Amino acid sequence: YLPALTAGPIDRFQNFKNELKKETLFGEDAYKGGIRLVMGLVKKFVIADTFAIFSINQTNILLVNSPTWLWMMLFAFSLMIFFDFSGYTDIALGMSALLGISLPENFNRPYLAKNLTDFWNRWHMTLTQWIRAYFFFPLTRCLKSQNTVKSIIILNSIPQLMTMVLIGLWHGISP
Image (cartoon, rainbow, N blue to C red; front, top):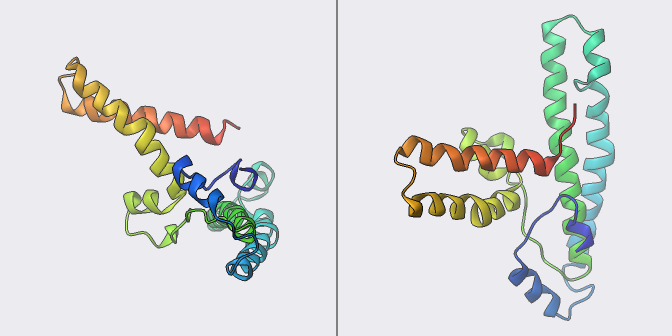
């Protein structure tokens, strides 16, 4: 599905198939979808691009020698990443709503999370759910069923490490 192809939100085929069966093109959610689409465009091309000018990157890092400015650039980078990705998701959700297709939410105010686990569960929620359902839990069950791994620490560490590697590969490797 083109609007969600590159960065999500990721949905299970069963849910998506049910959405395709609906015959509501430009239905009652079209207005909300249009607003969401415009908000996504503003987030991505106005807010995120503005933060990109001030965020930490290979050029800016060489020009700054103050720890305060480095922290400010790092803060701008974190906001740039959020507004870029959140904006893209809003664009995909808005375009889908215009076509009468409902996709799952992908963010739930991650920077207001109480801890790192809460942050992880609020950021790119659909990827997290997909990885858990189709990679992490099956790998954990496989390791437990084979009884080859005796240590509970290793039994927990291997799936977590491999999950992080998979998510890193998903996002791409760049300098």
